[in-house]
Image (cartoon, rainbow, N blue to C red):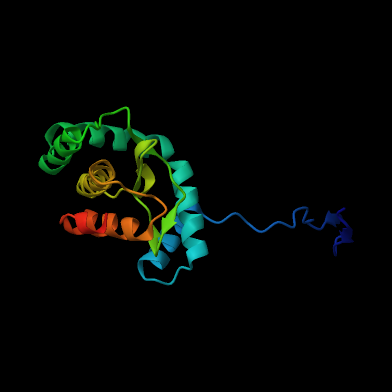
Length: 182
């Protein structure tokens, strides 16, 4: 409640009262750029990075997914590497199209940076729309995950065998066959 004070003229004035004890809300653009440069310069902790990507992902989820879907469709049609991997998967009895390459918002973090995609024999390829930087990055991620699909179809891949897991990761980065490990 405001207290009254008498001035020299004898008139009463009210002192301002503070009703909120919560801290002020930071400026959104300052928070975004401050967090971005902390991550860029390596000063942000893993927790700060997770929080930043989570908030950014929620805010831009619809536009990120729409952009990812549009790029996916273009890459399936025109990208030489994606078309090649799609053909190789088809030769093994699999198929990739819009129905089993999905774009979603992901909160996953792999290593020091965000994970951009994943392959599952049950669900196909999931692309993390909020972690894809541009069409070239998305092309690399799609091709990488298609190599995992190829390895899964070509060899008797056991998800619980670490040797198989390591081999398919090496294969997806370097392209040689790991048939000796299976």
